Image (cartoon, rainbow, N blue to C red):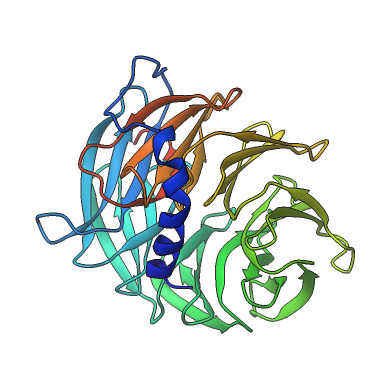
Amino acid sequence: MTRTVQAALAALALVAAAATTAHANTTSLLRPSVGTLWTSDATDSGDGQSHLIAIDPSTGKETARIGVGAEAEPWSIALTRNGRTAYVANFHNGTLGVVDTSARKMTTAVPLGIDADYVALSGDQKYAYVTSMVAQQLAVVDTAAKRLVKTVTLPGPAEGAAVSPDGRTVYVGVYSRHEVLALDTRTGAQHAVFSAGGPSARRVRLSPDGKQLYATDYYGGTVDVYNTAHPAQAPRKVPVGGRPLDLALSPDDRTLYVSDTRSGLAAINTRTLKARQFAVTPSFGDLAVSMDGKAVYLAQYQSTGSVSALDAGSGEVTGTFGDGLVHPNGLALGRTS
């Protein structure tokens, strides 16, 4: 499914939801939050560049705007743990942008030869894994050498990847095959298949210990929960309604937040697998959770052209910020560099 088609489908859903969120720079309910919030804007601005944008979540103010290439159309973002490097999957120009967040500049654009949708880092941060729905491939980048190591051909379109804590396995949701693949990170060989049990596996996320694998079933309206030690075991399915897309875990691993392109946002208790629904404007944008677990951020790609800040407990929108944003999509929260 192309980004244009995604946006068109989302626009239909927004007719009913447009009144739920008003656009503003900030609100008086913003609360202090450690770190820097990074978002990618898929639309070029007046300088002819696509941008990675830094926002102070305590004020909602933009603090940096870094060019990542003309018509790059950046989507997903992955940050190193110290927040000093950001990796940006540039969909349109098929590169992985490497950004020095302290120097406020892109240092390298690694050619991938594929339309880049999503990027995930290994635990040791030595490798970046980039999926492509169009090319139906997984690209592997050596982050130290800043070069493409290999591409792995997949059996269908894929958007989303997660790497096991030991770095030996990368999990990829294959959108059209109704399954999640477990691939050997060294060879690229497939060593397990998790049946999605539904129409379409989209994004994937691992628990910190690597024992639980979460996957959004986009057309099935569920989050599927797998035991990574037992690939043949049927997943537990958590209904969240609508069209679930992105996943983000709270720092204590007790809550899994799910963005939904039709019904907004859901919060799943990872112990009981019970879901709560929050009334938020639906979005194709990514999610991020604050380091203290008290705030959730959602990029409003196709609606308000902003980033929403929400209270993690109540789902109340506490701030809407992002003057100058047009189509924010990727989202990541990291330490202030």
